[in-house]
Image (cartoon, rainbow, N blue to C red; front, top):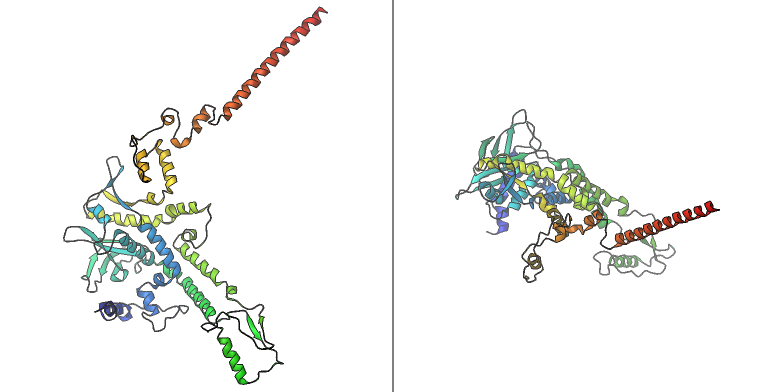
Length: 476
């Protein structure tokens, strides 16, 4: 049986039908908005697509772009495991049950750490909740199994406190109910009330996205059915048609210059007296300004997910503020998502797997290092000396080593010249000694000393002259 047959006749279709049938779900399927684009008799229907497969993520450009941007940036962060020592200083852990679990959370084929974190983040962004079950394989290794949102049902008391979760295995895993808290259940939920678990951002965006789909449909219809050029063929009434055949021949000839015609894009040959005249003040699709409206909707979607449109590309930034937006992205916009993921994983997992003093933390520094030039300059300034040997630098350039190049050399002006770092260039030392590396300060000081000497000479000569003149006046 081929792949297509399995999809159309196998358990996948039966499972989908069981989900899509409102009678089997025990809930009412929401009515498709009137502004939604109808797919006719296509499979699946619009309602099924939006309800079961999160069609807003699969079909809406803005939602897909923003969600993928957040997920790719966070899932690519290294997750490191630490342990606090006696002084409270963090020490990176490179072995142990919790480290192995965070290194590869899922043992399912093809599910890497990146892909596993990706699914959790997508569930949180689209469903405002995610849930995993902690298990152990035959080798005694812990692993996590992500549960899709339609495979579990939560119950809570009147205060909104979650009491239990029921897993619907759908013949894949056994159905089971877990009374919470349970060490095998790891979950994170946004908004919780007595009857509501998670508040989807996409529900708030649905009216805007329906408007965006309507604008896209409108523009497609204009492009398909509207006039291709703002003009018409003028024929004087004094020149009648010779016959009906003459009119039909001319009309059929004009169709050859339309779309899919044999002469499309060319200029037709007009009969005597005919001319092409432009239509002034004709309505054009650009007058609707729908592209700007759709761009504003994209910006609104990014804002709903607390992401600056400049970071995604929905709005153009400048060279002066792009660095500030990048810093804001990691220190303000993505930090709440990262913190929520870290705390959910650290809440119960370390103690359950036997490492209660460990915790996982995303390495944000890997995204804030900047360019290679700025990294090297910052490291040299922070350490106060060169941090790379000569031979190591030569290996980066595929050059052979040199004798004595494995030693880390510290310049004498750093150790003895009171220079704070090799990047200082002698500026601090020269300023303290009132000197300059290019000699300009020394030259100015020499000129000042010569002026001072001449001034003192002139003052002494004036004093002697005054005394001599005073003596001559006394003799007279």
